[in-house]
Image (cartoon, rainbow over all chains, first blue to last red; front, side, top):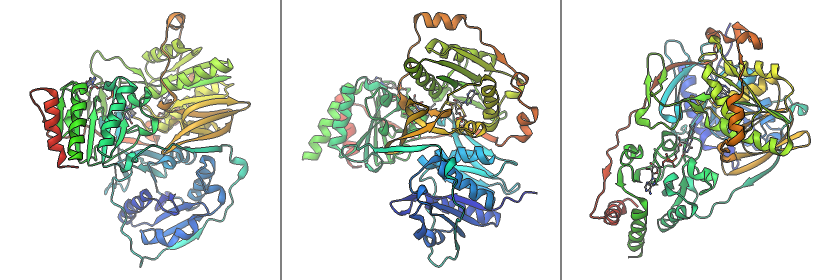
Length: 333
Length: 264
Ligand SMILES: Cc1cc2nc3c(=O)[nH]c(=O)nc-3n(C[C@H](O)[C@H](O)[C@H](O)COP(=O)(O)OP(=O)(O)OC[C@H]3O[C@@H](n4cnc5c(N)ncnc54)[C@H](O)[C@@H]3O)c2cc1C
Ligand SMILES: Nc1ncnc2c1ncn2[C@@H]1O[C@H](COP(=O)(O)O)[C@@H](O)[C@H]1O
């Protein structure tokens, strides 16, 4: 008999608070749980999680499981997998949701391998099929050229990682009631084989890419690291940030942390200026949320023109300096 | 050091979106004619990572691929880069496997090969891109896994991996044998040349069937699949792009800036 019940969100804590993605997951999780007439639970890990129980309840959780061991303070793949697997064995959820984040991307496939579930990563949409009551997950495939929907007929839990900002955050209601349940089992330290030696933050000068109102992105067409520097100049004039395609980052013209796209950062500035990049779907996935996309490409057939609002067909070498000069003039005047 | 690399042969992900066609009935992609399949991008980087370790520590690289008989092309490509041996896993029962089925078959083949220190996978396949075969495989084999490597070193009996995280990177260590998934940040793959191309051309690539690796039919039965694709669609987008012109390209640039000035 299928005794799997309920939706479990794998929570994340950022700067002592529930991470924005976690509040989004509580929103979708609540909907899915209500459609099934089941409960919504969340797992919070680390010694900072203790104080966040009521918070998670206000955002929709019926049950908050708190695993406070200090070994869970920072992400460790082995420790998190063990803690999450232990809880799943105890509460046997039918559905488990993760953010498509550093933690979710590492943890969910491992947990899936351990529990024998069915996982869809990078989902843009989740729903319950009214007839079968199965979780239906929609995700990009073929680098975003197509979308697939997937179900798990019998494997449990049905798991999904969700892209950030694809659903609105859960609404807060402080009158909501729920249970805060401490997780009592201790982790087996001998099963923790992977050790984090150091974490290094890569500081980027100027505006942070994800927060920038203007992003100037370059691709293979820029040709050299020096040429790529011209994009920085334009970004600087506009108070924006620079990003690159995978090709540009591979070539070392921009650091890996500035890659935009499916396997890089997702940005949604007011203005996205794409220079010398073809607009492969895997790249576009990272900038589709931009208010206005501008393309400069010498190939009028380039896919970027299919998603851009304004474009110039031509060599950036003739376009970019004139643009930078004109913007400078406007800013000065 | 003995390294096994899992590589997949995929439809060239660089075909322009306009040429990308699917058959919604069979939920498959229709390969445009004249475009040969390629080694999945991240898997090629995994081969590169293996070659760098071999350059430093000596040892042997074995490459495996589940696919059609043509998958011997990607094995040969890996051999031309520096791998020593390879096997194609081809069987009617291996067609359209889900992530668990794929990991199961790879696991069986790896157990047959045996004697490994390190298994390398790509971070995700460039076609269906499930992004999970490596981690499931590690769980099946009961070995540690480190994902998203941008640098791999062997230090005594440990593998020391620099891995990509959102705002930089972290360095983690795991005892070998272990499995590492490789990201593109590891750097560009070497170009095969000279003697290596000759060696690869001459190499016989054995094909293993389900029974050769002891894969059980019940594990490959589509009825037991963990996940099933229920539909495949091509998203439609219709943005009207206004092409801005001028007497010269710099005039066009100036005209463009006037239009954009309102926005920022
Ligand atoms: C699973 C998967 C994940 C991926 N993730 C990402 C990702 O996160 N981010 C990403 O960017 N890519 C990603 N890719 C790669 C993606 O498919 C493309 O390979 C990549 O985006 C192409 O980069 P590009 O546009 O710089 O290069 P190209 O496609 O080579 O385009 C270069 C463009 O520059 C133009 N050009 C050349 N010279 C000039 C000139 N002088 N003036 C004007 N225009 C010029 C050309 O006309 C051409 O259109 C991924 C692929 C896969 C399969
Ligand atoms: N058919 C296959 N043959 C060999 N390796 C594979 C195959 N499918 C997936 N892999 C490996 O698993 C990784 C992740 O694949 P996926 O989880 O499907 O995105 C790939 O980068 C490969 O290293």
